[in-house]
Image 1 (tube, rainbow, N blue to C red):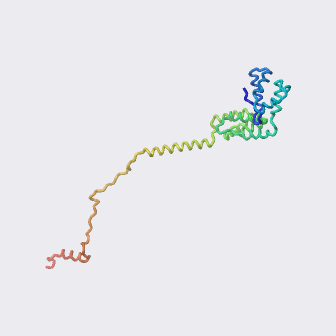
Image 2: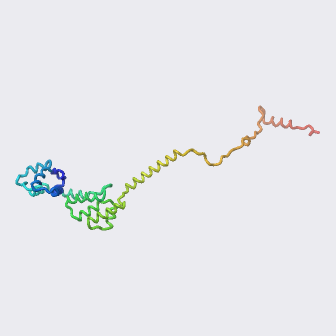
Image 3: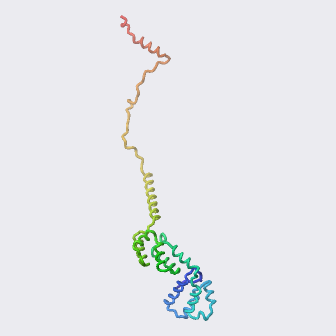
Length: 235
């Protein structure tokens, strides 16, 4: 069942009316049942508008349709906004090609764009890598644009630089964590180089002759000369 219509310019009156007709057809409602259903789907200013219509102007469902179309036809002042909304729509980072096409085509219908304008706006808003692949095939129909865009999407060409950078950063962080963990859990080991030892006896330094205390250099050598004198040398 269609949602309530409030009569605001932001609403899509034409599409809403189509939903109402389709639901009435599905339920196989008679003309009198349609007339009884319609005011139940209105709220706020739209409900007030319907109540202000003369009874003779709403005694058939066809008259209600004409009055609704006249009251809520899209004002020309909003057409340029509708067109700008189409051209400014770009495919979101996590938005699929199919969802993107649905969004653009809906806005293009509201703006009443031509087929050529719609095709250009669809290609313009695609992810860069997907757009490049689509342009290589020079599509002339909207269905061809969608087909090649979905092929590019399924092959993984929609991955952008921000995704790649994010993956690299996560890998670096993981590697850093592994390195720190390895260092913390590695036991201390002595160097594998051969140890050099010295014999304690070889490390004892030879004692050099010390000068006798309280003697001058000359007195020391004079005594040594007398002590070494041999009397036999005088004979």
